[in-house]
Amino acid sequence: MLYARINQETNEVLEFPIFEVTLRDRLSNTVLPDVITDFHLAGTNYVCVEAPPLGTINLRNTETHSIAPTSAVYMPNFEKFMREYELVEVPIGNRPARNENRLKTLRKRRKDAFAELDAKIMQVQSQIRLGLTPSADLAELDAKAQAWRDFTSQNIWDIDEFTFFTI
Image (cartoon, rainbow, N blue to C red; front, side):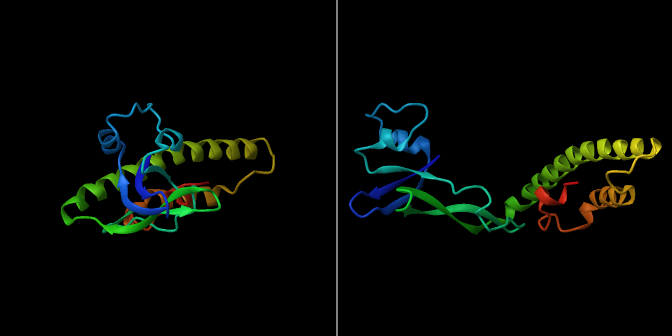
């Protein structure tokens, strides 16, 4: 969770982001539970700043930029503060490790997807042997597998692993 220091009268965000360790240091005279909520911060100038629902951030990481929470805004309809995200530049020295981590993530997704694909191919082959109508086209499944094998020939930052590695 991230936190913000606010003007309670106007809901103006004075400081964001504040990490939990910093919040605990600043409120060292206050007993805070393991999981801090707005209830526990009542009477202070601090609030919890929630992440927006999944799928609502329309930004994409690139080799040179990453998605980061850069501000918080009060949402009167929900009576809470929500994070706003922007693309921020990644320092040049961090980019090689970032690319390696991206490749590692994509390879893990591919490995998991291949396990599903292998099961699907076995099912289709069994259906064909039994004279049943196949539930999928083997040629399409083979083409998907080849695309997965060749993914490193693409810009790894252009791949949406949540849709690319689906059957």
